[in-house]
Length: 296
Image (cartoon, rainbow, N blue to C red; front, side, top):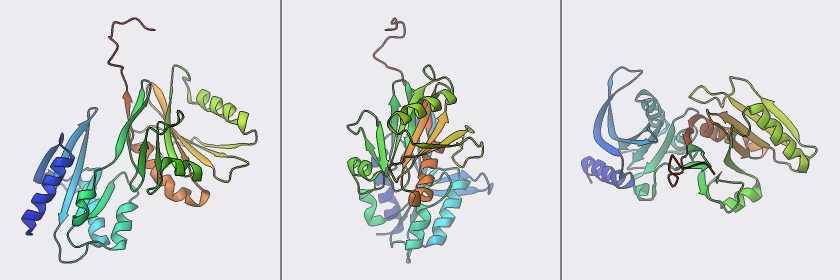
């Protein structure tokens, strides 16, 4: 297979994977830092709820494995062309250091590195539109985690966990993340919501200890400039604490709950923060009702 056939095959794969997107091969885009036109092998552009998303595909046709230097360069390239997601595809393979670098970038850039042979099994970047009533968000799935939609529990709209587990196993091991909402017509202020949740929690866990971080410089702060309030709950009879991040939007509060052992928190906090920083708010309207219908 020549490099032209290699890129053509990859292009056709992503056309099938993203049928509603605009896909350009061999595209040029001005770098926001370099101020130069940057060549992009494959640029995928789509729009969700009015927000533009761009995915950059870099097709490496090398005689040696991709190493950490190539991944470093690719991450810098994504930042320069202002793309939040990128896939680096290699025909030879990649080093363990390269894979680790792709998995653990600390910025709001999601990177995947794939062998060409694994392309058929790549299903894109997972995510979901999650809502409770009129409150909703477009929610990304953190890198190397999985999304379990619609678990059979009313408390959970969806559950994130590390791969290789069912949502039941994740709950049993107390290593998971979930999302929920509170509308401001019920609790207009975050202080009211926090007080209510604390009093409800203490009904079943009288000795639960609560810690809060109201710092405006919290590492969870969103790219839209919204403050994120962090809460840690330590239960007396449970060894695994619970961290909750509250994000305030115009009509509602969205809170993401992370349950993970203390030893795993620094690792999983990056996933937690990524979800908080990149979620996009939605107001969900029931199209089955006419606008002029009287309220129930």
